[in-house]
Image 1 (tube, helix red, strand yellow):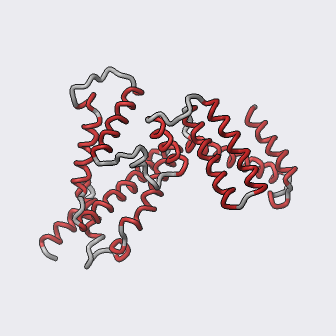
Image 2 (image 1 turned 180 degrees about the vertical axis):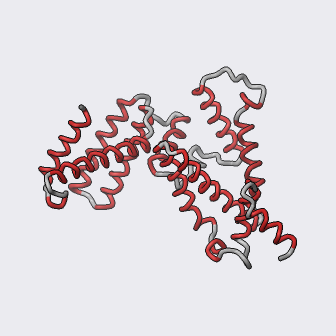
Image 3 (image 1 turned 90 degrees about the vertical axis):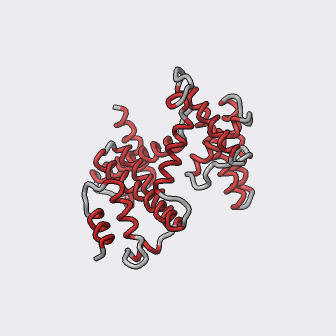
Length: 276
């Protein structure tokens, strides 16, 4: 083993090696001659689904309040960044250090009330508006001149809908109050019913999407995050359906041996139990 190889091995095995250790481990995994075959084969696109999955697992650990699990999941998410930056270094595009510098520069630029001379005595809402103005100026400098430019395509659909609507609202394309949004929901729901009865599957698909988009808009007007609201509804449905299963078990049954009328009645019983 050469001197360089020995130093690399020592760093990789050093439990106190910190970020340099992690970077070296990834470089070793990607080494075309001595690395891991699976890691060598990966590219930006193949790693992207894992990054999304890890971000959701971070959010899941936070929702559960599991701090040891959060620590673990944050490490997995950090590994994704290290993976991309190692590939970027190999391709000559960027490195871990350049990515760190870019985000540090961005944070300083976007917080003039902390790192500059701007007055810090303002509300969080005003700071958010100022943040958006700075981001808009950054987009203009990059020639992202169109209003909706820069809204990531691969965001969860409800989240992207809200971001698109916020961008449009900043240039005045928005309903002034929730009443008009509710009226639009009724209109879209009626169009969906009409499509179900009279139109093609593709037209039904489009009308359903329109209804979801307006529902996301209502959430924005009410200050409700539709993604979080739907997650909460999913959790509630799971909890209540499991309650139905528990009651069926007491009766010596399963959902497969029950029927809709019985399960619906048990569902109401579970809801009543929750209110007690």
